[in-house]
Image (tube, rainbow, N blue to C red; front, side):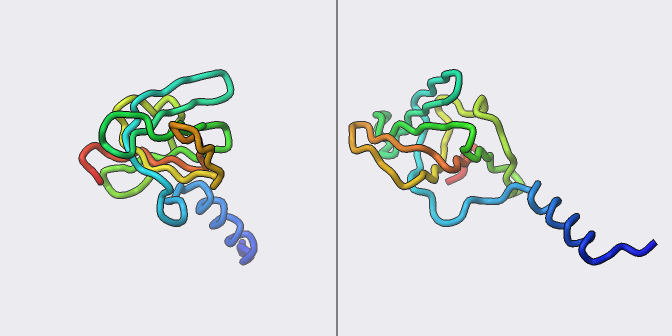
Length: 119
């Protein structure tokens, strides 16, 4: 049986699409989660980016947000919103719109949970 190139290409694309990768570009913010509030449709995390344990950003996480965790081997894995907890170190890529309240409010496109001890 001969496998046509289009079938191989399609299979490769399926496998590639199932493997999570790092979001493009530098993160828009990085810090420590000081609180996580869960509602039916959304999770809101409060992030301290300055290191003084005060809220600097409220980050909205919804079904469109890509949630990832860095692994010890340097790869990333998909996680659920339940993996986000107080004390977690995160990098956040947001949609670009920032509500200039205090703390500032953003909607996350991607969140990377960092391994303890990583920077």
